Length: 114
Image (tube, rainbow, N blue to C red; front, side, top):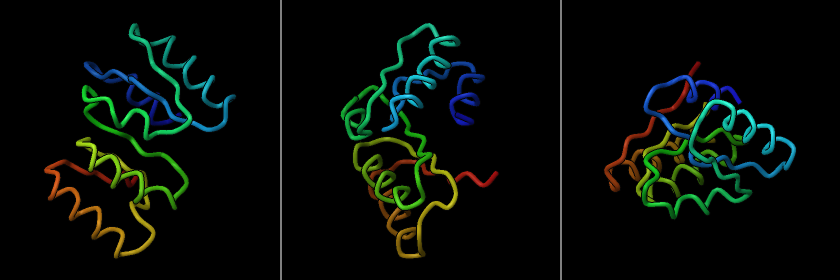
């Protein structure tokens, strides 16, 4: 929810989707977005669903660590910019895969290091 709250505080930012497998956590997140944002935010269990949305600019990845690289690679392949929590990857090889994908798809990637 830290990412959600931070994004909601920025001007000209709209949260279009929240992805969460736990229905209670998803409902909590959707409620928080609904209280601060006029546009509708869709809740999904499978993040790959929103990767199909051509109007989506960027994806914030706040998943268990083992999902950071696969999610980042899928988002980059779908033409999205990526913000990924630390660690950005599980090992150096995965980090190199993200760098190469960012170059290949000409997208920006930032790893958060609070």
